Image (cartoon, rainbow, N blue to C red; front, side, top):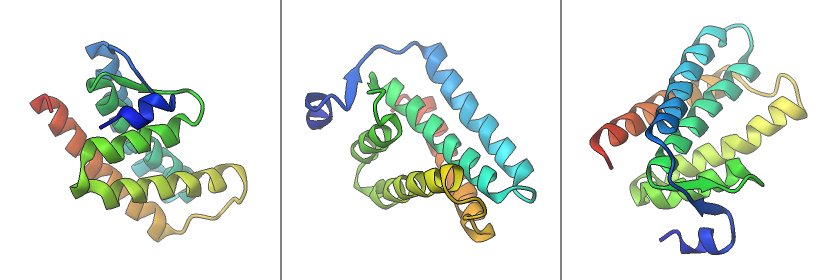
Length: 142
């Protein structure tokens, strides 16, 4: 299942401690709170923070499965892993998050004011649902 990602060096097998998994999930939840607080003031940054919540939840799940992304293109590799890990039912959602990865890069590094209120709120809402899903899966040991 993950062989292509392992063979190309995009992910590595690693035993990650339960404490590190918990910290990643805690960061995701903290980021959701922060994104919600700053939404009205700075949509670009709220978008970036909501994106980071998704990334941290994804990392927590990846860690729980015994993997870590390679440091080069770590965000991209994390979402490639999640596309396999979450299965077909979540294919569109993971593809959406990967597209938002690119948009976040533009908003943070290239074009200030790029993110609309609708885009920021959509990502925040999907991130909130996703973090809850990952929290549930981790609690169930999946």
